[in-house]
Length: 384
Length: 130
Image (cartoon, rainbow over all chains, first blue to last red; front, side, top):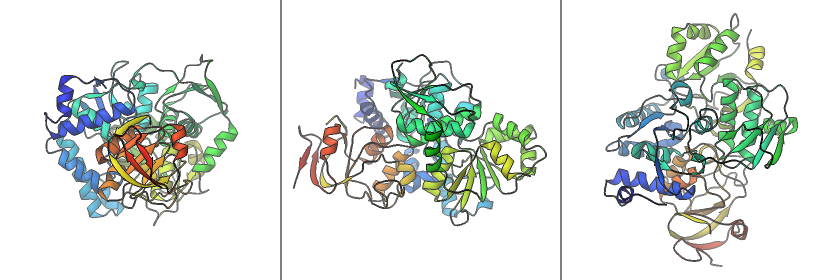
C-alpha cells in the first residue's frame, strides 16, 4: 500500500498510540482487501456497542481508547443491549447494565452520535450519490451500497472505528465500480419480506464481494431491509447489483427448493412463546404500517418491537406508540432482536419472527428455537 | 502463500475446519468453543491451535470476539485462511495473532493434528515438523 508521509509517521507512532493503532488496523485491512491507498471518508457507522457481543475485552478496550481518542468525521452507532427506559422490567444483572453504560459513555466521550441504531440509512440524511462512507453494521453496509448510492467496504468494528478516528479508509474493490460474475435468478413467485430475507441469506452463501440479482420486481422498504439483513448474516458479500442486462455471468436459480432448504435450516420450531419484530430495527414507515395492520386487533402473546429512539419519538407524536401498546406490543428503543440479552433460553423456548438475521442469532447465540413467518402471517395467526 | 496480514513466528498443532467460521454468533468468548451444531468443529475449542479454515463470515462485531478470546487466553496462536475477510483481518491485527492466506493447493496439504512451524518472514512460511 502507498501511504502519504503523514500516514507513515502516524503508523510509526509519531502522532501517539491511538493513531498508531488506528493506522495499523487500516493498513491490515487495506492489505487484506487489495487497496492501493487510503482515501477520505465522510461518515462512519460503528458496530461493537452491545456488551453482550463485545464483552469485558471490548468494554476495557473502549474505556482506554476514549481517554485520548476523538472522532474526526460524523460517526453514528449501532444498538446496545437494552432500552434504559424499560431495563428494570427485564431482570438484567447490574453488572451488565453498568458495563453497557460504560460503553455508551466511552463512545459519547469520543464524540460519537448516540444513535443506537442498525438502520443509519433510514434515520440520517443520505449524502450525495457516490459519497465514500465506512459502515460496519453488515445490513447497513449492504443497504448503503445497494440502495443508497453510497460506497463502503463491509467494515469490521475495528476498521470502522479506525476510519472514524482518522477520517480515512482503504480504497478497496467495493469502493470502485465493479461487476459481479455471479447472477442469482429469482424464481420464487409472490415473494414477501420473509422470501427476500431467505434470498439474502442464500445470496450471502453463494456470493463473494457482490452479486447480481435478476427477476425481482419493486421491493418495499421492509423487503429491502430483510434482503440486506439476510445477506449480512450468512456471508462476506456486501453489495447487490440489480442490473438486468448482464449476460456474461454464471447463473444460479433461487427457486422454491432452494428457499425451502434455507427455511428448514433457520426455522427450528412451529410455535413461539413470544414475537419479535425488528432486526434490522423498524423505521417509521414500518411502524406506521404496523399500526394500520393492527387496527382493532391485539396480540395473543408478547410482541417486542425494536426501533431507534428517534423513530419511537416520532411514532409517539403520531399516536402510533399508544395504539401499538394497546395492541399488546412492547416498543424498545436503542436495542435490537439481534444478540439481545432480553430473551433468555431459561424463560423462552421459542420465538416467532419474520427476521432472518434475528432467527440466526436467536438460535446460535441465545440458544432459543425460532419459528419464521411473514409479518402478514404473524398478524393473521397471533392476533385476535 | 498469498498474503501476510499479521506478522509472526509460532509453532503448534493444526486444527482444521472445512467450514467458514462465524466468530460472533458461534464462538464462546471465554472458552473459544464452537456452538453451531452444523459446524465441523462443533464443541471443539480453538485455544492454543493453529486454526486453519476457509474464511470468516457473519457480523463484523466478530472482530471483538477474536480480541476477547485472546484476552481470555483462549485464542488460536495463529490463523491460516484461504480467503481473507475484514472481520478476521482486523480482529487478528488488534489481538496480534499472526494471520496469512494461502492457495487452495496449500490449504488441502494442511492436515488436522499435524505439527507445523509458521514463520511469516521466511520464504517458505510453513514447515512440517513431523
